[in-house]
Image 1 (tube, helix red, strand yellow):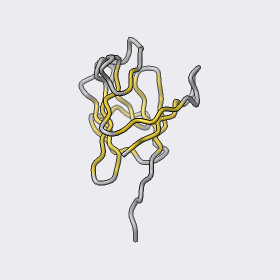
Image 2 (cartoon, helix red, strand yellow):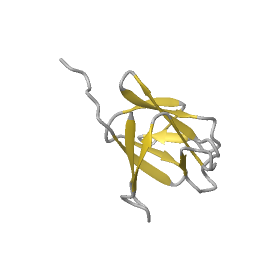
Image 3 (cartoon, one colour):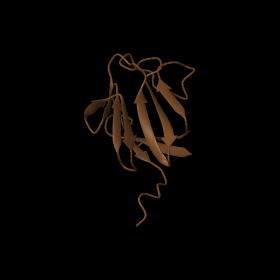
Image 4 (tube, rainbow, N blue to C red):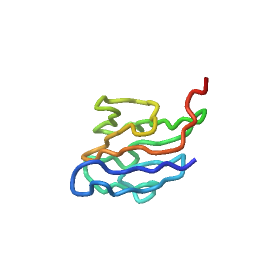
Length: 101
């Protein structure tokens, strides 16, 4: 599964990148998506797929991972949800079938 991440606000606003899951986000060059900022840990968080839904997991970062403004250890991400690491906030976009009734 691929996920499009768009930066919300700040100088890099509307800059977007597509990542293939699972993907580690962090300051390290070995991360799938590198964010070069001192408030971002080397391996800050991971995006992964579980039952067709994107989830985010904090990887023991020093400054935490926020979803909807709340610090999480792990949480689901639906299309248009936002998460923050360090000074950056990302909007999540992907194809989600959702609950079919």
